Structure formats: C-alpha cells, structure tokens
Image (tube, rainbow, N blue to C red; front, top):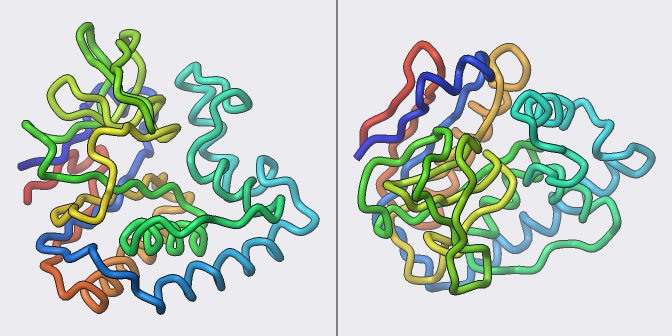
Length: 233
C-alpha cells in the first residue's frame, strides 16, 4: 500500500511535509498506565504554555491557519485538529482517555503542538491519499452511521472514495477510527518545510519509539513532501 500526496496539492501548499509512522501488529486491548500518565503530564504542561496566550495567535498554530486560508477554509469556523485540541486544554477542559493508542497519539501531539492523525489501515480498500475531493467522495461524521457527500475540490485524506479527514486536518471520519481491535495503523503528522518539519521529525521518532516500547509492534517511518510525494509500506 502507498500513502501519497497528490502533486496538485503542492501548487497551493508547496512546503507541505508530512512525517509518517506505520505500525503493524498492535494489541490495543489493554489500558497502559504509563500512557495515561504521559497524557496527563503533557496536558498540564500545555495548560501552562497557553496560560496567557490565545491558542489561535500562537506561533505553533499560525502556519495552519494561514494554510486554511489558502485552501479557502475559514480557520475560525473550522479549526484544525491541533488548534481545537489545544484550545480545549487551554480552557482547562482536559482530555478523556479513549484507548491506549489514541491516548498516546494525543500525548505526543500535545507535547509537540502538531496535528497528528491515526487511521486504521485494515479498513482501507486502496492507497491512502491527501488530494482534492471528487464527485462521489463520501464522509461519515464521527459518531454517526449515515454518510454525507463531500463537495468537490476540498482537500481531504481519502482511500478510494472514502474520506477519512475532511478539510485537510479538520475532523476525522467514523470510518477508520482507532478502536481496541485496531492493529495496523498509519499516523500522519502534518508540517511545513522550514517552519516546523524538524518538530514533526522529532514527534515521528518519539511516537515510533513509544509504539515499539508499549506495543512491541513493527514500525516503519518516512517523510513525504514535494520532492518525494509518497511512501510505500
């Protein structure tokens, strides 16, 4: 299988660079106390980081808000995932424990202040893409069972016609979400060359190390951008 950024995407987001972790043979059925503690600690640290700073005005978020505007997505109406996550934390609302893998991704995402996805590979029929949506693409909102049609020319994460994240890094689908039975997972970390790709690499490497430590799984890592727009795994 391949994870591919469609070349057309770089016409608008020419510096887009996505760090990638692919983990296989995970056992996500157990609660792992060390992950819960890590998540709690990183939440407390982030609360301090944004004690007197609005998340949307933070240097960590500016590049994503600017990118949303380039994509004609209103960043106030549709906050990117990391802005929404950090805004929740800045309001002292914390984060619920979901399952070990999701808690780990949230912990690393909060630490590095980067948007990080997690998608179940076993639910994908075809290669995984970041591309502009086409007629016939559908999306199942989180927590719902009915699909909705996606307008054309919206930047999405998608496999076949099954949209996994709408508005680039706004909101993931119900289909392909990480549950206790998920065992083969791809984790994309969206960043920009010369802006925060160094942190994305650090986040990728820490996530891969922790996945290996806690789940004893098989790991592959990579980085895709305009120079090399796909990874095969």
